[in-house]
Image 1: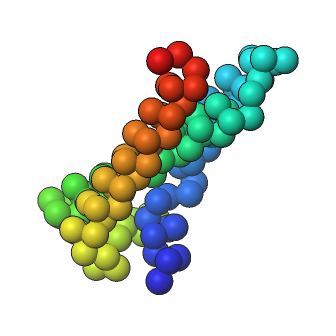
Image 2: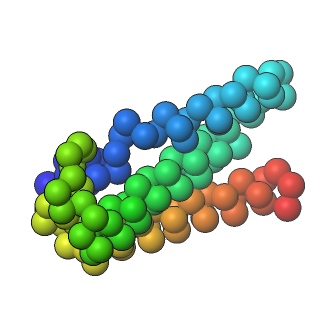
Length: 109
């Protein structure tokens, strides 16, 4: 069920990752370049999603989310194992690291 992973990524929080990239893109003006902008957006979104999964994992194993009201949590509800949520966080951080490395190589290594 891929939908649980989308819910676990907490899509409502992704605006916090998108807004700074949009602002920076606006300030770039005529110097704007689509590939670096897309890479920056990928880094930002991957980090936000990774943090969301890491928070889900840590709160889930500590029991903090056991009686939580609000958006779904994968670990606390048993929709996904703690190990798979932790792995999802690491994968998100890995994607951010690779995209960030490519961005650095293209701009200001």
